[in-house]
Each structure stands twice: as C-alpha cells, then as structure tokens.
Image 1 (cartoon, rainbow, N blue to C red):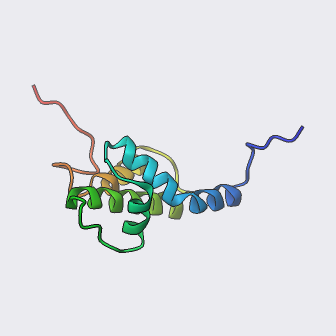
Image 2: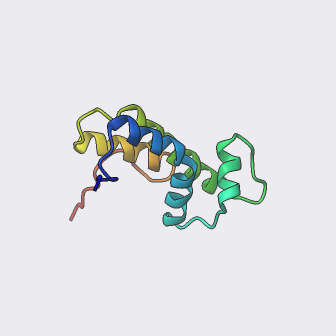
Image 3: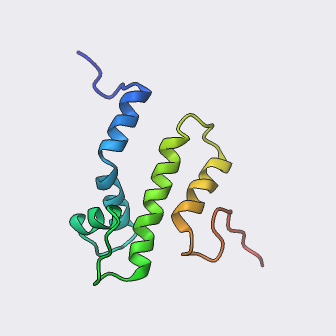
Length: 106
C-alpha cells in the first residue's frame, strides 16, 4: 500500500498554493473573524468589501503575506528566527510589537 501522505517538497508546495485561499480562510476563522469564504477570496483578489472592518481586511492580507513568506522560504531552517518572521507578517499593524517574543516584566 502506497503512503499517500509521503509527498515531495514540490508536491507539498503545489498543494499549499492550490489551497492558499482555503488555508487563509481557515486561519482567519481561527483568529475569530466572522468572514465568509467568498469574502476572503474577494479580498485576496484585491477588491474591497464595504461591510468589513479595516482590521478584518488587514488580518486577511497579513495571513496572505505570512503564507507567501513560508512558501517562498520553505527550504530555510525552521527555527525561532523563522517563527518570529512569520509572526511579524501575521501580526503586522495588529499588535504592539510584532516579530518578537513577548517578555513578562515583573
């Protein structure tokens, strides 16, 4: 029996690009956005949705940029620096300090 989950890097990249809108939509829903799949697709096509808040649109665009970064840098070492860079894309203009670890000052 063939292992259908053992894919090459090229196959994984193809699948990630093919499912990009679905992944961004699912990520947005996990972020708590009340957005539909067609709205997500429309935003990613560069069209504004009048009944959405600017923060919601910004979140979709940030997720898009984070996915593009991951896909473009897939062969880079997966380490804390890489994770912080992904966080920088995801939280851009949405948190006080993006791309850095939070520290707790007593």
